[in-house]
Image (cartoon, rainbow, N blue to C red; front, side, top):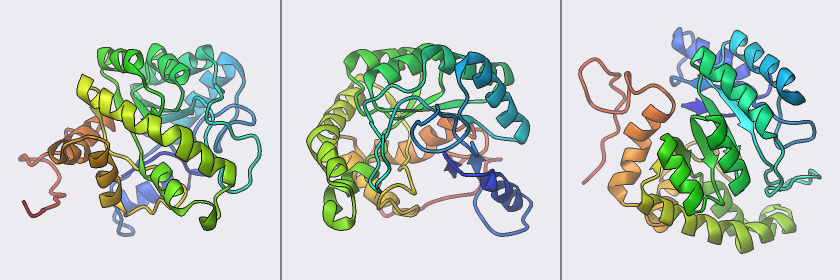
Length: 268
């Protein structure tokens, strides 16, 4: 289970309690608190400039995170927060590079929240490990991602569910409109083309977002199938690909001697 955004290191405490069998729970890989800019998307520390970004990255690693999460551009707000813009580039390239340099030095993966092409391209240049969402990943961006061997987690469920529940479900009208009219049509097509080109997709759902329950894995799988991915590759994205993307391939993701016996058995 990869945790991509907590509040106050509570997920690190949960991870350790699970690992020590103090309470039952899954194996967790945690970023604890994402790094963002002042006034930027989501929550977490807000450094400014490369020096401060390096400092925060080092502090998070010292606190025991398994990977660093960076919020490279804006996101969506459905609950009344002002200033949310999924098309705004928030983190500068030199700031992003500073985090990646620390991650590379300490052999800690860097995960990037990206929607726009500019955010995706900057993340590739900086050297991130995985890209989340990748909504406006065109052919050029996809080829850059393939060349660097970066994993992409598409996360359809949040946006598909916003479109389903609409304003009747309590989502802001402007959020519903941008999802239906801009994000989803582009996201589905870009995913289909990137899949054909050979982008490596891992499985993830942006759990905890709007109408995106933590255990609704089949829903995300269906959205990926509807966007053009084969069922075999969807299962592979949930197992081998995801374990490689989050750095646990030596322990999980395939049925092999010495690996964890965490199995899911499905009808053919």
